Length: 81
View: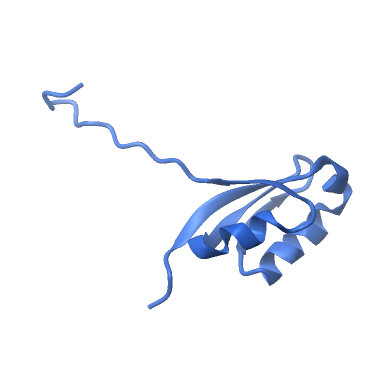
């Protein structure tokens, strides 16, 4: 059984916006499962093993890597609101 994958959003650096597709290929080669490439926005979404984050962040053209944030609300009839 492999390491669980985390959903991430990668922001492409301003100076690499014209090469967003090439940055996506680098991410794939580094182990990221690329889901969507939003070239007009310079954003790439997908999944990757958590231990790959530092490798992904160090790639040329990567400005930021953000993990998915989730929230759990209490049920409506819960005492805590």
